[in-house]
Amino acid sequence: MSGLAEIHQLLTAARAGVSDGRAHAERARTLLGDARRALVDAQAKADPWLPGQWAQADEALEHLLTRLAAADDSVGGYQSRL
Image (cartoon, rainbow, N blue to C red; front, side):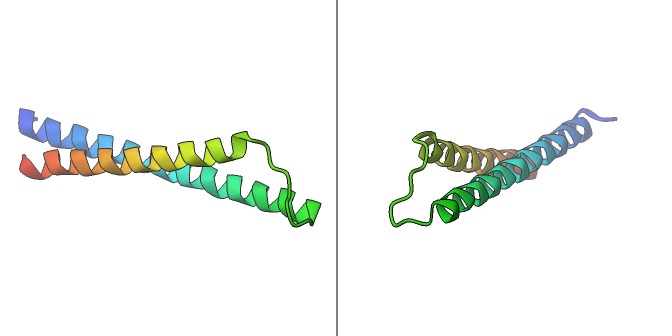
């Protein structure tokens, strides 16, 4: 296998890994939202209590998704230039 073909193969594998990471992070964010709704619905009051870490977790997942999208763009850019 030529060096260029090997690089393409590795970049394709890297993009697949990033894609898997994004899917897992999106699923985690969905589950976090589902759990939040369950807590709010269970409390059934105007100002429900949620742990302080909730907002941090949501923010961290959003940051992760942004970074994974940027990584995918970068790897795709490298791959298209080869």
